[in-house]
Length: 112
Length: 114
Image (tube, rainbow over all chains, first blue to last red):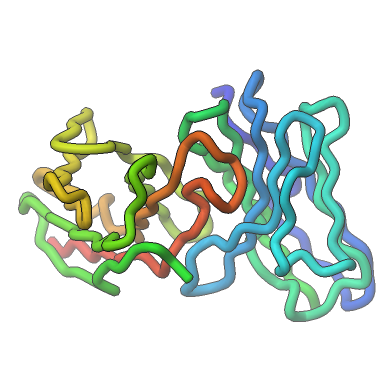
């Protein structure tokens, strides 16, 4: 299966710690997206990459959040000084230009 | 705010056809309509996408009237495994940012009973 993969699938951390998630998109997809989803809500857009360029960031992406996509392949999402309110499912999706997005399985973060 | 409006929940029984309607009164000329299915603790799974009239694949059909202000996802002969949340999104596929189909609402929680 060459779908979108995310690691780790689950992460438990203590408040104040830093965490990093990885997303491997479908190969040759030039667009990559990060979303956050809390219980009972739909996914909320966080940020978007076109190749290696981060073209848009949601206002939900506070300065404690940073995302990178070096070389336009995999992407990482780092959360610094985690807070309990950061507990959520973090989803990654990828697409080709003018094509629909395909989502990964998500990384579930629990901040204690 | 989501560009679409869907029922919060629906109930059905195994073997029935289920139709979920989505309203998108402000759909733009270049917007496509996309439906996703999501199971608990999984990422959304693409079901179907269309621009106008009718689209059918091996999983579902999508009906879009001429004014495109609404669309209906049709799931034939549902089974217990179709119990999930279904999201309707509209957006311009030419754009990858917030102009694209990135705004999810709360979706429709479909419960299929035996």
